[in-house]
Length: 422
Image (cartoon, rainbow, N blue to C red):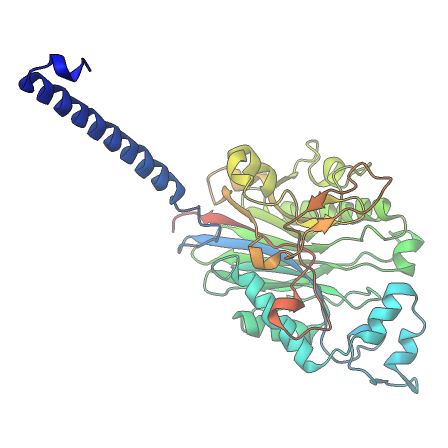
């Protein structure tokens, strides 16, 4: 602005007015930028929960980590999950006597755990809260690490499935099994559930000496879709701690493949839709690999597709909102993709039932994750001093408090499928 003394009052007023208008424009621009930024900050995050319409199904799986009732199961080593002082029928001994035959961590856990009815009921409540984080009650919910009929009946009741469930009766020495819970308003059960047994002359001695869990197969017809048969397989494959573990998982995969082939031939490829879900206990780096070399082998005519893989292809950016896996292994500080939802290829042919890849979820709300981060304390490790947060909280079997009991060392997985129009 020129020197004030050289201006007339009119000119001076003009310059003052111009300055005021310029300042007002700046304030307006700042206000717009601020409002725009605030709008971006307040943008609602995508709903991570799943909600199903009338022609949709929610498919989910959850390893609930040792859901045991309080009763001794004959022939099973379920001593840890009994009330203190329980007498073991036919032995003249108590729980604590059998705890004494264990070693290390397992011995200590067995002696310290007083697994009462209150503890059992509390764990059921914690599982209900975790399953509730999926969104709507899943139409198909595979459960791993559940003990027996009583535990399955109680869980189905608490979750709202009523009598729509089935649990296997496997020879696993720990006494854990798999179960499938389902909603009867959209699905009609066909025939009797079938258990694929992984023992006998077709399996090596290690399978018979330390048996694993049976694979459960149940078949359904979506109500109003008479031409479709949906086979659901619930899996809990031999663990990473198992003897000859890779071989065991390969043979388990072959047994699953064999049954899928037989059922597809019997029903017809066009009508047969297959879901295999559960805890497969298989690491990506394993060689040979039960997925690369068997279940997802492109040379197999009934090869399965992984919902998580399809979700990453469909929307990699959205998938960053979830953990990279369902289980965090503290030993080598890595996430592992143990829990999977697998589908036959015809879920993508847009004819009968269609998979919705973008609906895939690794269910990981804050309450399922540990409050305290995990810090690596290993001077020889490259990651020494690194801190990992948002890790599944596991379960404290001594606690009766919601905030300290925890949930499971695995996270649930879920996805939606769309049924053909009726």
